Length: 31
Image 1 (tube, rainbow, N blue to C red):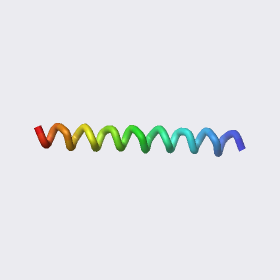
Image 2: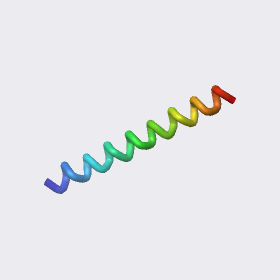
Image 3: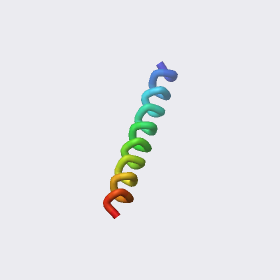
């Protein structure tokens, strides 16, 4: 159970990092 929770947190962190990276890429391409 704890492993699933940790995996979920890791997935959420990766998703957030991915979104931030994409939005930064878009900002730089716009500039």
